[in-house]
Image (cartoon, rainbow, N blue to C red; front, side):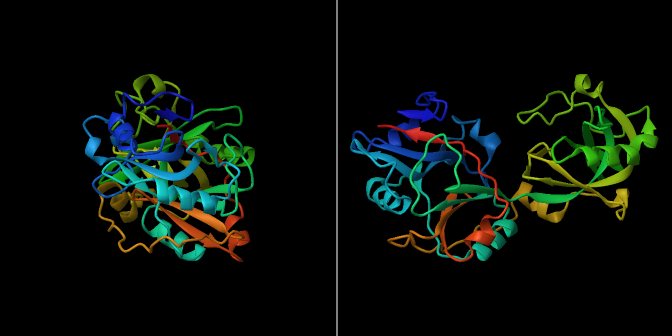
Length: 338
């Protein structure tokens, strides 16, 4: 059986993955993530919704094992669980194991930022499995893309600004990209409001609004939602960090970083790196190292979610620096129980 972390049965939706797991011994539970790979090798969330027509591009990546032949493994160290996992799982068209690398933390971070990797997850190699708990034994570091955007409107709030409506130029046209609410603190909300309050205009400056649908991630700006907006002369530039561009040229997981007084609004366009992330011009790295037999139990195992594989990195002295400020969040999981 395939279960989501909310215990929803997914066998009907992903029957081909359930069949791919039939070789697992009875009484075995594994943990992983279902990923749809786009033409550029990146995980594609929109494609994942087309789970029937995109069957050939959907793979279940397994990174942990909780029970093996009715033996409870959640108190067994991660390094041992990984060894057992490698002995049990037989990769096939819809099933893969996370790969393992011995690269340094600095190399992995550089690789992640260069190749548009979504995030890094670090786990202690001697850690036990703690379902549903946020502990210091694993941490998550999101790799964001960032660039400047032009503010063309805002939704008011009690401190002046609740969220800003931002976009970029394509020729002479200002193109809507996102509503950004995250990243603000009371001080920056007031600062941004003072910067833009005198720029109010009657007409929306974005040529691609309104949009007909709010979209999967809620970034679409419909005519109904536009009634909440106050429109502005596009003269203010802000720095926005975000996870990725969607297929509709919207930003996912966007957050405000800072005002940019040194940037010309008319020169704010999609950066080349962002275009490559959307249209697939990035090359796929080859020749990943083979898994080591044993991870250092005193170090960290870093899971690098990238292009549909997971690289595991053992860290020692660099772990304190690497983990500083990382987020500790429960990842989305799919568990398979044969």
